[in-house]
Structures are given as structure tokens and as C-alpha cells.
Length: 73
Image (cartoon, rainbow, N blue to C red; front, side):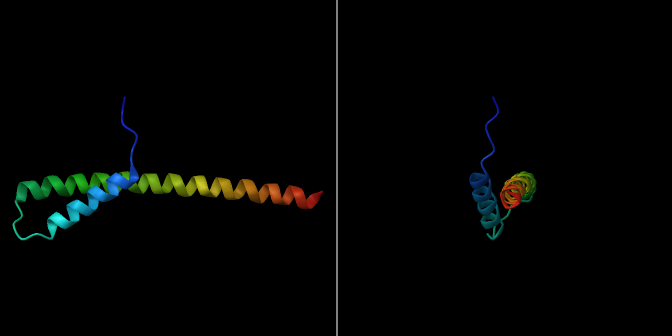
């Protein structure tokens, strides 16, 4: 079974990768690997944020329509 995506852990890993790139001794092959990993994590985080944004909009619209129904009574 696939592990559920953890936004916080992914963000922390991105921070670790960023800090690694701030170092002085950077191996090219390791840099490419870390860059790819970071970009993959950023893509997953963007998807997760977009899903959360959509969910918030759904909730907001639900309550907005409930308020309109209450005002009509």
C-alpha cells in the first residue's frame, strides 16, 4: 500500500535539499539527484496545495449557499 503524502515532511525535505545546496562542496551527480528529488517534491506539494485550496472553496461555497437559504426563509 502506498504511503499517504505528508506535506510537512516533504516541505522539510525541500528545506534540507536547499540547505545542502548552500554548502561549498557540491558533487555534480548528487546535485542533479537532489535537484530532481526537490522538483518532484515541489510538484507534489503544489498539487496538495491546489487540492486544499479547492476543498476550502467547496466549503466556503457550501456555507455561502446555506446562508442564502437561511436569508430566504
